[in-house]
Length: 346
Ligand SMILES: NC(=O)c1ccc[n+]([C@@H]2O[C@H](COP(=O)([O-])OP(=O)(O)OC[C@H]3O[C@@H](n4cnc5c(N)ncnc54)[C@H](OP(=O)(O)O)[C@@H]3O)[C@@H](O)[C@H]2O)c1
Image 1 (cartoon, protein in one colour):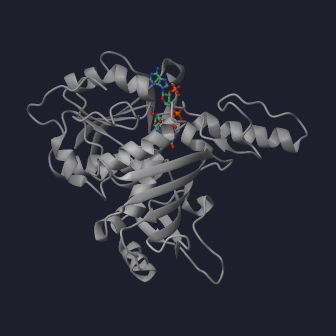
Image 2 (cartoon, rainbow, N blue to C red; image 1 turned 135 degrees about the vertical axis):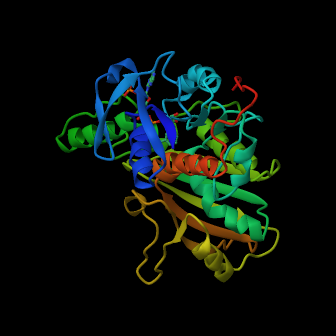
Image 3 (tube, rainbow, N blue to C red; image 1 turned 30 degrees about the horizontal axis):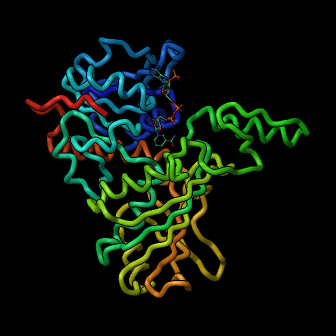
């Protein structure tokens, strides 16, 4: 049994972590719920018992074995040294440590062995990356992928709990004939969509797109894999969808791709061609599996396959993946190892 802390417990990912710890019966001896001072006194329920939310401080991690962090990059960066010094293992949902060569970046269905090399911090990949990777890795194992082209349709909850409220408020305002007020996003998202608003680099790629590219290469241990992505925010509350074009060195049979994906861990083949029924975010919401369907030959390329998928990015794209990592650590007795080097740089 472990002393577990959730840093960012009141957020979209934090509350899902709480739900999943209970649902999956993770061996929790005691639970500490941490957030900012704004949330002090708030109460959250775990297995029928109410817990106070505390403001994180210097003593918060004393005696803690496992920290599930989902309070954003700057908060993870600020508290990681304290967490590691306290002897706890940190499973971090932010992007801060993902590309650090000393930090494993883990999708349990793909590279579970990587957890063994941890030095106190394990990074949970970006949500769009996890969802894509779970669906395409089983094909990559059978025939190495030469190139991935991805287009995302990302729900507002990817930007946190307040972004969900913004979509609801803007929708009501527009239906009421009022001008929508944009606060979390730079532009109105209700009845609209726009390219992901993370920072752009000199090549015109935004951070979210570069995360999909760089993180996939690290998780697949394929540093030269050719990937391009276009990330778009859409007015959906929960679950991201993605159109994925895969290029192989020779044709990949659709029948074989279906067979592989129908048995792949973490994937649910979802297609009824007669009914024109394929993955939808409304159905992916709340599900552990990434829904994949509409598998078809790319008519412009004999070596190409097209996939369409939807996955709950708060669940598999964040909280579930983090708990699966914690389960791997617990199964291998890798929480609180006797000695390890402290990793502090991001
Ligand atoms: N949402 C997703 O789908 C998703 C998917 C993958 C990864 N992530 C990553 O997970 C992290 C959390 O995302 P989220 O969507 O859950 O965000 P969120 O809903 O905005 O929640 C943020 C959490 O961080 C806490 N927090 C903010 N400032 C803090 C501070 N100074 N000290 C301590 N706690 C503080 C907040 O507490 P208060 O309530 O007190 O402000 C809240 O609990 C981010 O790094 C995000 O990139 C999110």
